[in-house]
Amino acid sequence: MDYNRLLRNSHIFASTVREVLERHFLEEASSLPLTISQFYLLKLISNNELYQVGEIAELMGVSNAAASKNIDKLEGLGLVTRTTSEGDRRATLLTLNPKGKRLVQTYEDLKAERLSPVLDQFDPAEIEELSRLLEKFSAEVFRFEGSTGDELENSYCLRCAVYLERDCPVGDILGGCPYNTLYAAHHPEHAVTEGSG
Image 1 (cartoon, one colour):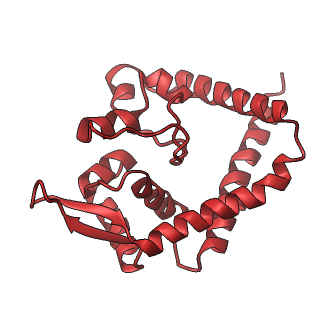
Image 2 (image 1 turned 120 degrees about the horizontal axis):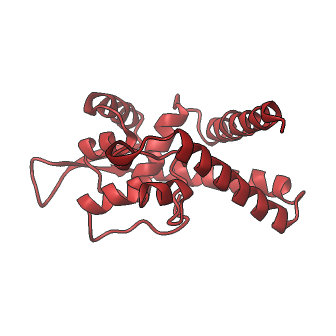
Image 3 (image 1 turned 90 degrees about the horizontal axis):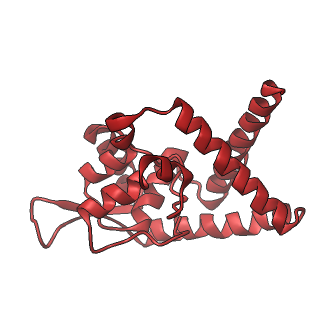
């Protein structure tokens, strides 16, 4: 078996999605100086606008200081607003303001528009099979190389880059999506809808 070909093509695919598609879509959607990671944070906030800085840090697997720095940047660009929680005056909640919502929507519209001609080159069954094989390969690599026990169960994830789905193969390995588990612990009354990312 040609492992090098598999790894080469996997790397090309991953870098194409991140660098060619996502970075390009972000640059077209906005001239603001945003990194892909900051945009993922913006999308995370857009999914459920009830976050506190500590929750963002926990979900992203970074320190409170690192999360706060990125939130400060988004706030400075006029994309995010911090408000005091009505239930707990010590807590500061994060919400997207209209400019942030427009940016996320513009990005999503561009993504749909630009990917349609590419996807039209494939039979729907081919796209489904590619998705299935990518899920299976990613899950098996993660299962083999991932941690075990408590370390694995307590690790942050978001390897999907906030393209959240209920039936995540990595989440299956972890006994549930770490994002959904953590979010539900903080906000049991809210649920992530399938395909909301």
